[in-house]
Length: 229
Image (cartoon, rainbow, N blue to C red):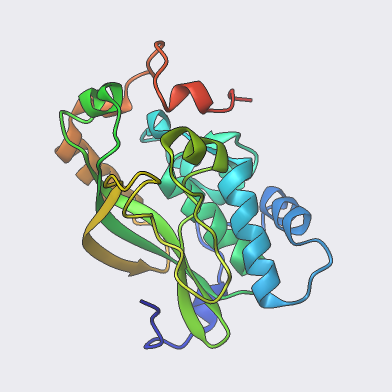
């Protein structure tokens, strides 16, 4: 459901430690994505697609290095997980003149691999799943750029599309009607990435394995992840 309760103030266009959109890397990423478009909806759509598909989803890239969560770092990465990707989309939207903020929710992934479940201490609940909220056409809309199109095809799930007018959330079911993603708890929106809060909760919920070196064996995620730069 879209949120019209909070009108944007200048803070939703501001630069922060993690949403460092004035950095050259973010500026280049943004300009390449939006091209010559001046329409906010078209800009939002193009930015969403650029983050979704140019940076492949990698759940094994979770770490506690704050540098890896800054938009300026993510803008030149080939892979990342949902939180850094949401950071980049939010920062790029601000760079394009679109008020934006970060949103987080806890979700249950019903199509998780055994390897990933083991790294998460046996859990299939992802805390602080990251997404962006953009203010277009006088209302806030949610955009979830986490899963690239290639990965969606592997799991039999349609890629998430964003029309700039309606919320683009994780699909509840795959193409065969099996449960895919289930939203459990909405943690609300933030002007800035609550980095320490997120890392503390990730460590508490999953233990030390979650931040160890990525596995060498292939699973449905690693087989379709772009190689690191």
